[in-house]
Amino acid sequence: MSPNDDIVRQAIAGSPLARLLAMDVVALERDRARIQLPFRSEVTTVGDLVHGGAISALVDVAATAAVWTAADMARNPRGTTIGFSLNFLAPARGQDLTADARVVQRGRTICVCDVQVEDAGDRAVARALVTYKLDHT
Image 1 (cartoon, one colour):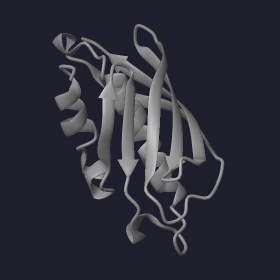
Image 2 (image 1 turned 60 degrees about the vertical axis):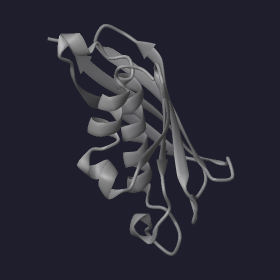
Image 3 (image 1 turned 90 degrees about the horizontal axis):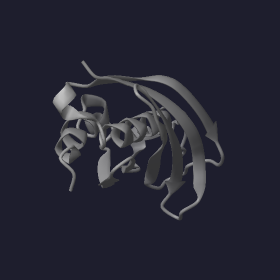
Image 4 (image 1 turned 120 degrees about the horizontal axis):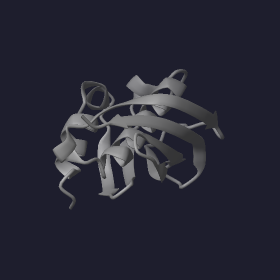
């Protein structure tokens, strides 16, 4: 467990939106986060089809969590997503989804994350590239 795990769990995965969507941390390690979005009717659009907005929120929370796993907390960091490209690969129907976010480049203030979203059967349903700005004072 890293020193930033509590921040990630409470402030990011525990944010009001993440709580509203019932997201849960599956695993954390430096520069990587796995976040789950449980299936329920509130995250659907038609029938059992998971809404693209819910998947987008899952991607953003997972990428943010991955970035913050290695943030220098002594420097009072602040951050925000500044870029987001998402491709839907297959319909997400009636199953929990898990986003696996990995920091692929960590610069002085800009981090780039690759995020793969899979259903409970390990089928890829979405892939994203997220750019995150992490400022230190």
